[in-house]
Image (cartoon, rainbow, N blue to C red; front, side, top):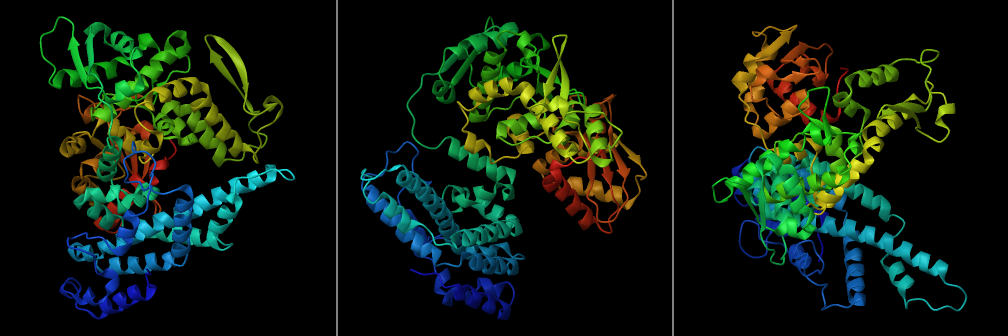
Amino acid sequence: MAIPGASLSDILSEMRNSIRGAGVAGGELGGFPFLAPVGVGPAAPLALRARDGATPGESGADEDEPAHSGASAAEKSANEAQLASVYESFHLDELWAKLGEALTRLRADPSSAQVLLPTIESLMVVSRHALKVDSEAAHAAEAAGAEAGGAQGGEDKAPDAADAAEETLPDAEAPTRRAQMEQAFLTFTEQHRKMLNLMVRQNPSLMSGSFALLVRNAKVLDFDNKRNYFTQQLHKGRREHYTPLSLSVRRKQVFYDSFQYFQRRSGPEIKHGKLNVRFHNEDGVDAGGVTREWFQVLSREMFNPDYALFQPCAADRTTYQPNRMSAVNDMHLAFFRFIGRVIGKAIYDGRLLDAYFTRSFYKHLLGRAVDYKDLEAVDPEYYNSLEWMLHNDITDVLDLTFAIEEEVFGETTLVELVPNGASIAVTNENKHEYVRLVTEQRLTKSIQSQIDAFLSGFHEVIPRELIEIFTEQELELLISGLPDIDVDEWKNHTELRGYSSSDPMIQWFWRAVRSFDQTEKAKLLQFITGTSKVPLEGFAQLQGVHGTQRFNIHRAYGEGRLPVAHTCFNQLDLPSYDSYEKLRAQLLLAMNEGGEGFGLA
């Protein structure tokens, strides 16, 4: 079995000489066996896909199935070694580049691009195996080396363990080849994300099969495709039958009654059991509506200040952060675990919650590091001071050490950011490290026990590795849903600085907003205000650091700049562009790729 790179070169040559559109779709590719599918159907598998299906242990297998019993460990090892030798002979980086060129030539006609789907699937399968083989070979070598190092004199070792690892170990050039292949794959998926998302949208099952490798570069997947894949993976596999979760709660005590019930249930019971909710002294059979209301009422009660679990953020008063002084409530860690279970259950059941958290808290759910810019929502003034420090020479200006004061229950304590930090001065040379450490202390370490308790409950229902495909913005949409955004109402409650309503930039901006789909509108609102939540009273009541703060657009200066958001003030700094298409592209880039950055508040 071989995949000659020349085949794609020949295909490209034929494409260049063919008539655009009908020529490609009309059959000129029929002479190239590399594209000829085995069998019938729009996505009929190639020989490589058949080979992939014959390989045990693939991601498509039922997660509850026992290990493949038809092959011994030695046979599996030999099979992997055979695969390794085959895959290493492919110059996959060149194939990805050639396939990318082919797709580029078909970009104007998506229907014609479907002819390349079997080829894309084949390369996805091979790349998945090649990356897996390289990784597993390295681990095998490491394990074999450790075992050999531990053996003394005539002590026995597992027969042929090191030899088997050595046989499958890639040569010295393998890491370079793997890096080249990885980069070629990333480049291909980023350049052709629109076409790939269209293919997945038309055939969602691709993500559970040959296109599973796309999760390796999940940022190229649109939110709806990620969500479909996530839901499919979350519910796949067989499971035991679990009895329904029959809750009977008092409306005024919904938090505590629900907590008591969940305390008596295991993680699997909560995950798989069907909720059936009844409110005391209220008529009604739960056909779904009562459970939906229970989720909404309970999610609002989580933020009841009487429990001291969360505190509203200074920037908007609508997003919440764990309260570092929640220990005033003796039950706080048990409550955080309960809330993690409830939010996990809501996601598992596809229910939406009236719950909005800070970007830093969403990052903790995704296992990602926080950034000092995340402080903007929690403490705008402190964020401003860090911004000033980073952008100015602080020599002989600030008298700081690697220790900060924290007040807990009226007592001030000194927290050293590094050992002996109180004796280490902050200088212009080490200020970036100081900012990193103080951010970690404020947003992570000071609430570490609360975060850990929440995650312990959350991961009982939602697997860690599965939720991590989302960004923090997408996680908010997964938990709280897509908002219903009235663009006319948004526009009517917008203030302009340096622009007038008749300026082309403003007219193009609103034209771009109207062209966005529901997810893109929500991401734009997140980018500008820090949350996708629209106040019940509408855009006239958007909240900022000083209370009600309408959305405002300011003229920005400087060619080639991206739009910049100041979430504390619901402000968008919009540069001038020479066309509508350029403005729309820059806006999308800022709110998607540039979503990690914020301007000075």
